[in-house]
Length: 92
Length: 488
Image (cartoon, rainbow over all chains, first blue to last red):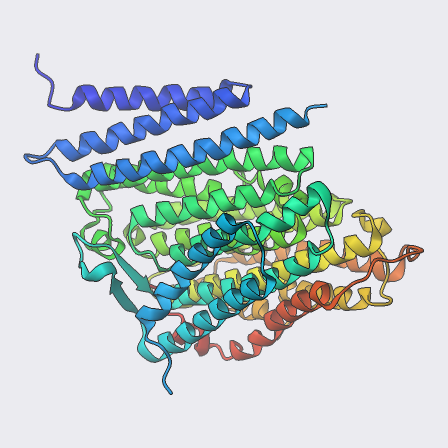
């Protein structure tokens, strides 16, 4: 049985998203929540890139979007980590 | 002498705040004249843009001369311009208030004064970029700039509760943007376009992929706009932040996410807005009105009460969706936009005045607030005017906005939504009335050494509240808002 091209990637994207969403809801520790969010975001990125390659030619726009998205994710993670550090230092 | 062209003004509005913020951050110094000059320039640019849009209508500005589909363009729409002008007014008021509020903080609290203004300008720039962006992905980037600056602004207040609130806000905000991005990916996979107008042209309402995309975009934005039941992060973040921060967050940042909902549902997603979707979004709004209103009534702390009031007021704005039909689309979108503008001005005024009152009373319990005496009178006057605008007493802007929606409800015979609106207005009246009654009839004694309330702490709130009241006169003529802010 042959699957349509990209099916594997789409499944992987869905799986990553599900793992991340699950972690975001169930994990108590803030660090794990931030990591879970990053995993889920990676799922969205994978979806974007997969959708970009399903045509006959590779569409560059999703790649540009994912590149920007990675920069955004990096910045948000940095802010989140900074906040977590400050919260830890304040712990009585 | 003519005004600068719209293209120049848009470039100023987006780049000036970001550039100034970067320079301030890098230099680590806060020259007050420079900051106030930049804020004033931004306000003038936004007002000039407002005049231009009245003369020229919608205009499109390809960045760097690259046109769609390859290039990205900015679009100046009437409703976006209303938001830009309101942002400028609140931004300027907050900048003046902030310089007064953080003036004499030393030690660890002095840090607040150093980073407040750069973060304020980053948020301002993000807001401006969002109001002129015209494609799904740029909107995402603008949302993120705005959210990150807002989270940092909440975390300015170094208290543990504020940090926890900031963390919850960040997680909710990031969750919202991730779901939004998922929607962007689904729609892009389907149609291969990001531009809002191009998407509107090819959108197929029957297609399951576009439905899934629309749901993802909407859920993401509902989380960012703190619409019931995704509002859990808002009261803590807005109630525990420093007063000028709360003013921008409650007045503008939440409104920006809601503005985007309006923009999408009356733009590319318009084909999907049927009775069921409208009723669902309207029910969320009714829940927000009720839940936010009742909790605002129960709060004992002034700023928490004002924060819950935001949850409730955005429930009101959600009623735009069930009331919209093909015939009254323009009137309903104008009503929604005016509602956002009114809420931004009045709520910012209320938070700024609340900050002044809390400082004067050295307590934020409603029972301990100083009465209508001394210089605190001017803060109370701002509270009274802002309350009138939030309740929607004629001739405030709140009245014009609610009147447009009421007319739509009456014309359609939508008695359920009419009842929800009246109930929400009564709840608003109840919790704001309780505040005024406690303070004016049963005030706490003046502290023995009252802190000095400078003009910077009194004037911005008063002027914003006055504007919310006076602008209603301009919008009182029924046809004016619909003509000036056609739905697009």
